[in-house]
Length: 326
Ligand code: AMP
Ligand code: MG
Image 1 (cartoon, helix red, strand yellow):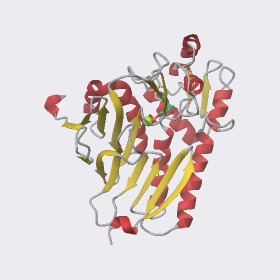
Image 2 (tube, helix red, strand yellow):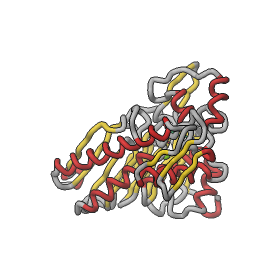
Image 3 (tube, protein in one colour):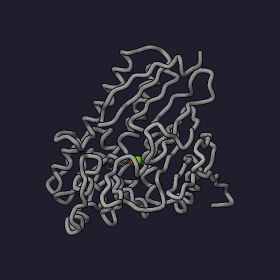
């Protein structure tokens, strides 16, 4: 019997996404505890319900600092640092624009330019005051809103991995709506085969397969959530400089890393950098590996140290970057 035949898959819908847990022993009770853990984090971090710790911070914008629990503080500190990175288009105070566009939440029209213009000053990450000792977060301007959508799933995937490890599980995979973390590989197999989705194609169409063991695989793509208007696509990753969807040569960026939070931050960061700057940045981060898929049909692998990638679709041309090409 192959490992895939011995796998037990448990699914749920949480955080508005399909969640999949794969184990090699049948343990429904464990799966239920994992889903409960994810739900607990969702309750702390969501901005899609009136109440959560993050919503309390947003509701107190311009008024007073809000005390949060240590994991929420640490995650916000992490998002804050990524947002202050030089030339970073990652911006965790993008909330007012995300809410206005509503992309992925039935948004299907372009907000008036003057409304976007008026929201831009409310998306300045330097206006967030963090007090580590008091564990408080203060958004200094009224109307500011934190959005952890680009980082929360990665953080939660790591917490699920840690929990499974504490429970003595040695081989498992958790897929949080495309944000994947793995423990080791399937029994007697080289690794987990993770499909790289073909953008704007059938849901099961793949560009290729990434093989990993005990690593995280995260993808940010403009095909994940978008609407179309007058033959133009408007997707969910926004450019904090303009307030409009970020437009460059990329369809998607996938990052392979040890921790999923690093991958989740890096996909959004690299998406904003584009291929050339992104590859130069990855040179300074040897613990990360990335696969860029471009609108021109190129698949560019920054290296194959952490994973092996097999291209399956002949419409795409592979390119492996060596030190000489960077
Ligand atoms: P991801 O799927 O990890 O690329 O994150 C996309 C989500 O992050 C969006 O749905 C928004 O909630 C949020 N977001 C959009 N634009 C940005 C940005 N420039 N920086 C940080 N988060 C963003
Ligand atoms: Mg991300």
